[in-house]
Length: 149
Length: 288
Image (cartoon, each protein chain N blue to C red):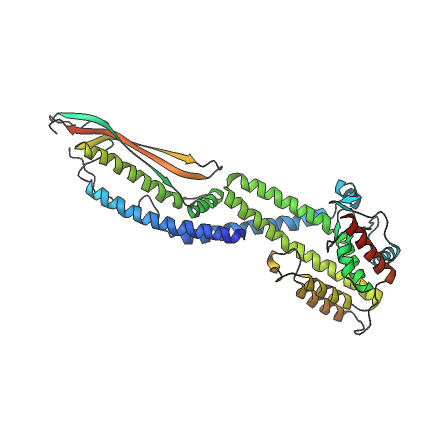
C-alpha cells in the first residue's frame, strides 16, 4: 500500500513538475526576448556618459518549489554524490525569473539600464531535515532612468 | 561602451539528461548496493553469531516469563503434550548444554514460535486445529529445529546489523529515502528468514520419519495452514515464510529421499488432550 502511494506521488510529481517546468521555460524565453532591449549588467560603475540620469533600486524576487519526484532524486544524490541535475533546472529558472521581474520593474520606471545587479538565493525549509522545499531568489540592482522621462 | 543582454543558448546551466533515466539508474544502483552490503554483512554475522554461547541467550530478560504479551503462560504442560515434546526433542540430537523448554499459552492465536533461550511457545489456537499426533510432532519438531540451529540468535543479529547499517546511512537522507532503505533492508532479511524455515522443516521431517515412518503429517500441516489463509497468499518475496505449496513440494522431495511407507494411517491426538483443550477454551472464553 505504501508502495502504491509512493509511486502515485512520484508519478504526480514527475508529470506536473515536467509540465510546469516546460511552460515556465517557454514563458521565460519569451519575456527575455521582450526585455532584451533593457540590459541588466553586473558592473558596479555606471557607464560614462553625459546624459543625466535618475537612479533607483529595483528588485525582483521569486519563490520556486521542487516537486516530490525531484526531491527523491536529490535525496539519492545526497547518498552517492554528483550533480543534482534535478535542482539545477530549478535554480536556473528561479534566477532567470528573478532577473526578469527586476527588469520589468525597471521597465515600468522607464529605465534604460540596470547595473550593479546582484543575486541572492535562500532556501525555504519545510522543516524536514535535508529536505529543501523551495528556493527564493532575489535579484536587485540600480536602474538608470533618464531624467527627461 | 554598449551593454546588451543577447539571447544565451539553453542547456549551459542545466543538463539534457532525461530525469526518468536518472531516476532508474540511481534507484536501482542504490538498492542493489544496499542489498549487497546487507547480504554480505548477514553472512559475516552468521559466522560469528552462532558462536555466542547458548547460556548467554538464557540471561536475556524477554525469556523469563509467566506472562507473555498479556497471555498467561502455563506453568506446567499437560502430560500428553509433555510426552510428545520429550519424544520429539530427544530425537533432535541437541548439542551439549542446549535445553528446550516448551510452553503452552491459552490463547486463540493460531501460532507457535521459538525464541531466544530455547523457549518454544505453543498457542491453543493452533493446537485446537490439529488432528493427528504426527502433526503435533511436526510443529514441535519444527520449532525445536529452529533452536537447534540457533535461528533465534541469528535472526536477532541480522536485525541488529541491518539496523546499524541503516542508521549510519540514513543520517544524510530525507524521509522517503529512509523509508526506501528501511524497506529494502527488511526485504533482504526475509530471504534469510525463509531459508531458516526450510532448514527447520528438513529437521522436523527427518524426526517425523524416524518416529512414525512417514512425513505425511508435514503435508497435511501445510495444507492446514493454506486453508487458514483468508484471501490470497502474500507474495513469497515479501514474506518471512516460504509459500505453503513450496514447503509441500520440498517435503515430498525429502520424504522420497528417505525410505518411508506411504499409506500408513496417522495416529489421532489423545482424546484426553483434545478434551483438555476444549476445557481450556471454555475457561478462556469465560474470563474474556
